Structures are given as C-alpha cells and as structure tokens.
Image (tube, rainbow, N blue to C red; front, top):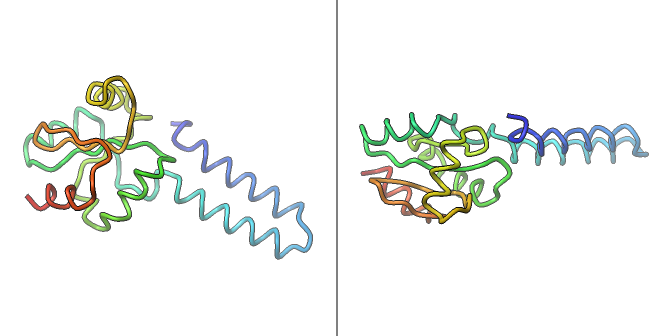
Length: 140
C-alpha cells in the first residue's frame, strides 16, 4: 500500500517544506497548491476503486466488461483514465502494486514486463489500449 501512496505523499511533503521555508509566503503557498494538485493526480484517488485480479476476472466473465490493470504514478494510465471520463467507472480496475495476482497477470500477457495500462476484454489482452477501443468494449 505504501508504494501506491509513496509518490503523492512525497510531493505533498515537499510542498509543505517549500511553503514553510519560502519567502514571500504567497510563493510558498503557490508551490504547496501546485504540488498538492500533482500529488492528487498521481494518487489512486482519481481512479475508480480497485478490485483484486480474481474478483475483476470473475465479474468480467459474468458481464463482459473489460479489466484494466494499472499502477499509481503511471502517466499512461492517468491519460487513459481521463480520456475515458465517466465511462471509466464501468471497467474493473486492478492496481498491480496492491495485487500480486494482477501484476502476475500483466507479466503473463506482456512477456514478463509490468507494462500498464493493460486491458483484458473477452480473453483478449491489449497493452496501452486506445481509449476508443476501451469505450467500445464498455458499450458492448
């Protein structure tokens, strides 16, 4: 769990240090706000609630929705999440840093790498999927 929150917490701590030490104070507050916003973007907070890989695979088999494997701090995962908008809530998101089975599933698909985002829909894996493809899979 600490790996998921490590970068955002570090950014927030740096923001606090800059805000306390910087003169004039409005510059420090500006840095704090900027680093806090970046910390939120890199945190798991902007993603739908993660489920385990086993749970995601079980649910996907039942309703056909795609499973998307991701990790906090991944700019490609963040880009996919924002480009999907509200439709992202319909997919099953698995944080590979929190779920070893999810990381193993990604490694099996990518030949040993933990390349994310990786989508699996209908048993078909796609590494770094196009948002339009994910939307089509969500609509099906």
